[in-house]
Length: 115
Length: 114
Image (cartoon, rainbow over all chains, first blue to last red; front, side, top):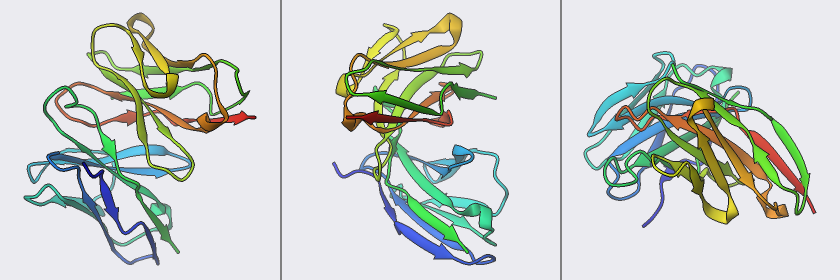
């Protein structure tokens, strides 16, 4: 099976712009989660989507949003970018059922740089 | 809220040395526990996981971890490290609430010198 894919891999934006990141989960995985990774804060949970519904959300401002489509692909959007949003954004998918139901499989990430 | 604490931010070892990375979590209920590894330039990969049963779990590449419930700990061990083990290691907890959400520790950067 192909792994989790994320596009684009690298992105450079300026303050005030908005950005959309995309994630395709492993085939058959219905849950998609997003994490932000920075050197100072480490890995922090943004949100989780299951069956096109956000079912869990981390402690991030409303500028961070996401959605999931019927094929389980997910996008996250960050509006009004700030310098502090520079980070590696990781997507993870989970099968939700079976023995690995709580295991998350990570993609390579999108490196966002805000200038 | 859950939290995960990893004791060491940086560890430097020589090849063949033994490794133990500490991880403690705070959560009063049932948890699932994970160790992930991030090799330079690569994505996060699962090393091993504990859901239930035998508290000593074995993972890939000779790694193992022991869940000690009374100490809220899930330490990672390897008897003899190799240069190729140089990577960042993350301990993570899931509260087994039905969500897949992981709470991560800050990570431990392991450097193995040949």
